[in-house]
Picture 1 (cartoon, rainbow, N blue to C red):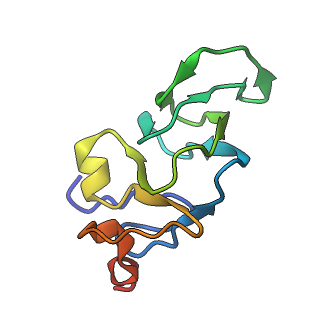
Picture 2: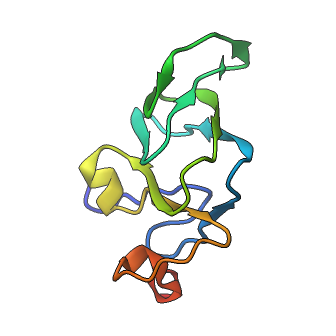
Length: 125
């Protein structure tokens, strides 16, 4: 598996374009797993509800992680309610290391700390 590359939105960490959101928006994460492996997808700082699996509506509980099985699609709406920079990634460590991470970035949010996610240089490699 040393040569595997995993991506979100056809981009691999660190070569990503952050997903920009605005506080107060209701958004939907859409996952489409085109691989033969499962991916437990985790969104930091937020909760979401799985509302559709493989085109079938469901009523799921609120969560911060969802397991996307091979060849599965999942829709998960969430409310953008906590400004900042938040990671979205596969919880399989070697998938993260192979690039399966991105950032949810709130527009207009200013971070004066030393947070490396707040620097544009973090995404310009």
